[in-house]
Length: 89
Length: 206
Image (cartoon, rainbow over all chains, first blue to last red):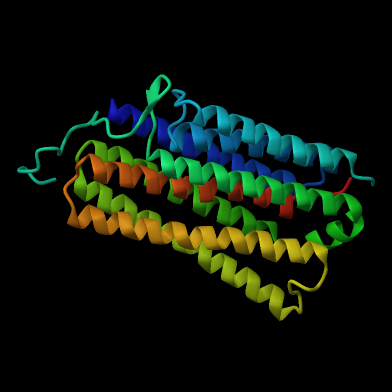
């Protein structure tokens, strides 16, 4: 059981590392700035969820802590994406 | 693992408060602190984005002076260190004391890379004449990354304490709660950087 849990943690780390490389590629290429930046911010939200679900072990739902972290990532992403989209060019 | 240790090897040792359907990894007081800290940072993110809204051109030109490679490197460093700590917690539940020590030591060694990169980055900026007083963007850059760095230093100290406890104490319920709580604090340091890096380094103006 614990071996399976360790495998889950290692898989999460591999996905997080891969996602970081994708983010760096998106930041450095010539893709349209707005689309690339929005993709980067959504990937960041996905990465944050992986960290609290698998590293902080909230995947099975220890309440209210999982709900708090889910709301936090949603609010922070909304603040940054919203402000980014509405900032005058 | 000591053969005489009555608690060693209890893979499913339930040590923490039960909340909802499942036990929480770590102490509830530590989780309250983590929640308060995350809320504080959320307010700081809002302030940063508000100031960026007021001066998008200044924030864009200033952002371009940052090196995203260093930010990405630090992301990989913190993620890898966090992963090693998560593995240490699982090993502790299996009662594998030597593996816990190994993973915590590696986590600290990898984690030390974050400080090296950050000091290099700060040094490079200050050497180029860029400081907290240069403009609003760099005020936020130094304040936010500096506050995060203080959390990182605290996290490294917590990991050192967990390592010392692994060497000195029996792997009982109290020890496991310590390790889980310290681990969750370290993951929070990682989690905050996952917001700071894209928000400060990568918000490219259209």
